[in-house]
Length: 333
Ligand code: 5MM
Image (cartoon, rainbow, N blue to C red; front, side, top):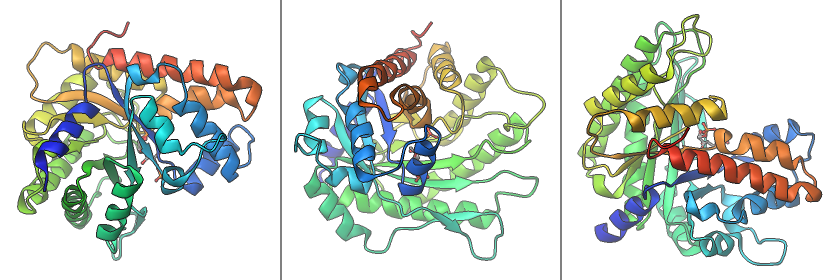
């Protein structure tokens, strides 16, 4: 295993002032996003939309990497250039989502386990040839009074670590994404306790399976009040609790933590990241972003499927990327 190469890529993904665009929506998810702007989810429309984002002038100032879906990694731009080359020419690192989705966990109603380990070694070999330099696998955990179960936490930790080890074997940096969902009426206290339990399990498996920490990144949720909780924690509290939880669980050898937005508004996701980076305390890892919705909601709406709106879409994307780039150093105002 070439750990130097892995560590170089991991560091580049969390370079100062930069973060990741998650554009890895699976077919059903991108359809949902396109439905919201009354655009058909055809292969060409998906290509046009994503090409617009990747060709945004100067996006590489604030975007270090982009996570792609299988289709996009193989797709060509309208002028015939592979999209991977378009991304690389912008100084951005191409990555790939390799999980096959969260499926019902047998014997545990309401819980999911992420699948996709079968044949993953072979898929990684192909993805490396196609130009992917990092990867992503997402596990999801629902909070209720009784969930997540110990079983859900254990099986997903095991799968995340197996995926990460296979990814590194192929020379690809694994982003490990355990997402504790913000849906529900739980308190911020409960979110912190669950997130801590999940991350402890994930890093125990990662240690057991010998994953190289320096050549990996973590993509967690922030510690937030449940969406329907009457009392909502403010930005300062979210920042303080999130960093406290990560300090208790994430080894300092991990070079960076790139948050998901998880359904927060785009402005909220930026403010929370900024508040964390403004905290007056030492942290061993970089704190950055790997947002999907929080980076794409504005450009998707501005574009609305019309070629005439391409510049407006790119402008909206650039503004979100810049705001989050500034938030990685606490400089967003
Ligand atoms: C962009 O959305 C990603 C793909 O989701 P599906 O596999 O469900 O289609 C998703 O994995 C994303 O990378 C993360 O959830 C972060 O995105 P958000 O929108 O939460 O920042």
